[in-house]
Length: 72
Image 1 (cartoon, helix red, strand yellow):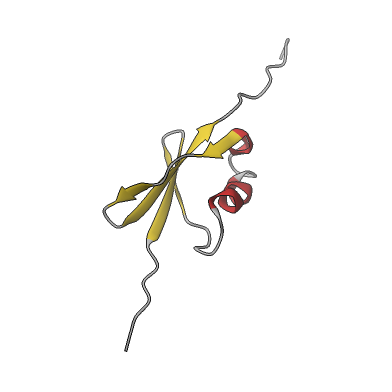
Image 2 (cartoon, rainbow, N blue to C red; image 1 turned 135 degrees about the horizontal axis):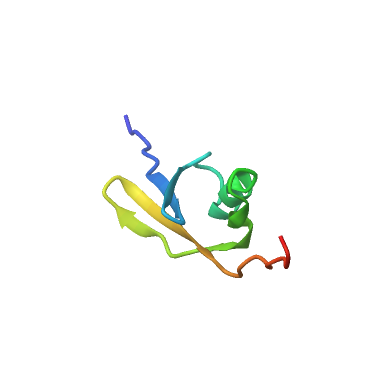
């Protein structure tokens, strides 16, 4: 009997470790799922996955900073 093991994914963003929402989701879909709680993720791109001890670690990198508003 064979057992299928799905490697664990963790996501790093701005010093925060985010858990995998759903292993079937793409990293871009995980960004969309976390954006309501972390709005800066909307400006991120997916970095290269790194091999970790218990799976893979994917880092989100800010691609373009949000526009600053004057006077607030």
